[in-house]
Structure formats: C-alpha cells, structure tokens
Length: 79
Image (cartoon, rainbow, N blue to C red; front, side, top):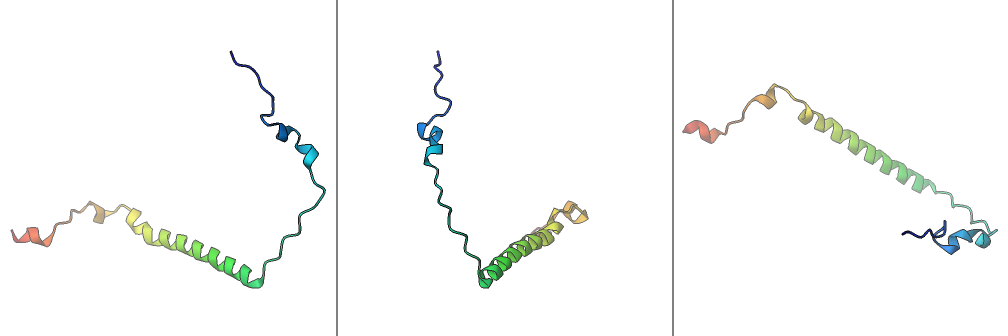
C-alpha cells in the first residue's frame, strides 16, 4: 500500500556535510551608545504602557455595588 521512501526527504540535506565551509562569519558590530539608549527607552515605554493599562483597567475589572445598580437615563424620569 505505502512504499517507504528515504529517511531524509531531500538529497541535499543528507549531503549537507560535504558543503560545510571553514569560513567564519564576521564578528557582530557593537551597538553605539545612542542605539543602546534608544532600545532601552523603547523597552521602558512598552513596559510603562502595559503597567499603565493594567492600573487604569483594574477598576473596570472589579465587581462592586456600582456594577449591580441599573442606570436610568434622565429622559425616562420626566415621563
């Protein structure tokens, strides 16, 4: 019914050892001071935004007496 194929589906994957290079990649460039400061400020901005949304969103997540009261419009009072 089913015929077993090669253990590795592509021949170039099986022969990858033949194509390895002895050339090392160049070293990564060091970040400048302005890049470090910029990334730090971006990270702090994201963290502050998440903390602020959590702080301002907590009152709406709490269940209390104010949530059980029904709101009525002023227009319905004058009927």
